[in-house]
Image 1: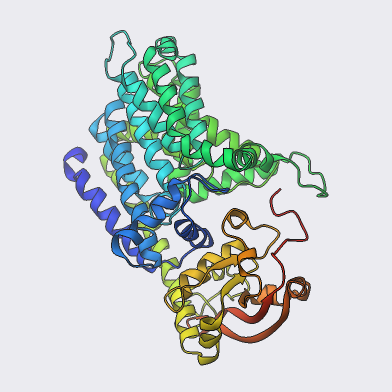
Image 2: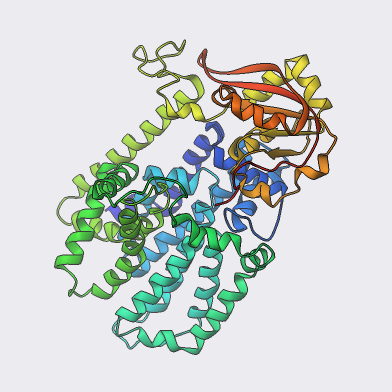
Length: 528
């Protein structure tokens, strides 16, 4: 009954429409603004990430000719639909169509998957697409001939390309390659795949696929590979030493559960533990071994690492993507006991998650949870100071208020370039102001990220600039005083307030900076 009740096409379509609705109304994040600058500085790779996030972010802009938060996300919306379908096909190949549909529904509704993989433009979007393609290819390679001897095939060569493309999306792709090698080593039926001529060809194609990454790093003293794979895990100079804290690792695990949503996160970990401990020698053990390898090394490794240093919430998520395959399989088994409760579980979870997402979207656009908002619900319970979503900036409101200020608009049109003090602000400011005056944007900061490798400030010697920053940075006079050494004169010229539901959530300060005297060099090392 469940297998016939809803089509795969309908699940994918409803998910795409829902995510598109959120993508249209969701304010742009700091990372999205920064990756938008990638599209204006196209290169073989970047300090922060490989090249594919630039292509994903730029796709919607190049196709439509329109620059907006929604067009930045068109590539992500399309890729995630493909990722979901590939995950469905993988589950069908491993188990059955019913398990595939349950897996598809779960992956479609998990909030962190929707946001990080399917709505916001991040490196995780192309990563999870090629990750999913690699999983399907590996499943087709290792489990096509059930109950027959395994023989390596051409798919191993294709797998090398897909893992390479995952690496060109995000450095997590290297972990996927390691996990697949680990599976082959631990499965006696598949070990000879590692010495196959197809694997040798696949490794060669993997290296060729990584040419953009290697070429850019070769040009820049291997700085990105060194930082992302090694340096970011070194102790910060002059910082107090910290010992390992298992409580912090537990917090990371709890946050993972919350982002997956408790009605999915807890069952997910329960069936992984149950299956690993009790069922490892059953008929499906090879398939389960495959799922363990593509999920647990990444998730457990990062949870353990979280006890030592801070990790980003998206880092472990590709591992959970693999875990969902096993939860889909068990979901099919649970149907044999009670179809009604399984449907209630899936439908109830979907309603709860999407209701929460829509309420958050409403708050982001109207300030409905602010105590003093004109559109508040239940008298509100948040203030701008206690609401982390105030970090998101309404770029359209920003642009409108600048255009309505003759003074600020005049300074913008007279400036030769624009700068801010944080790399993540620069992209959002450029996204907002480009339609008013498309001038170069740069960053004066100890942490300049990609700006260290893009056209630098020596080209603007003797030119005038517009400096824009947030209130909290304006209230740090030592920061503005540092910039005074680089200009003949810096003076404050005005402010604009960003409001939500009539509540001021951000204030931007504008400065006129005349005559750049020397190229900007931070008083601290720009890259650790």
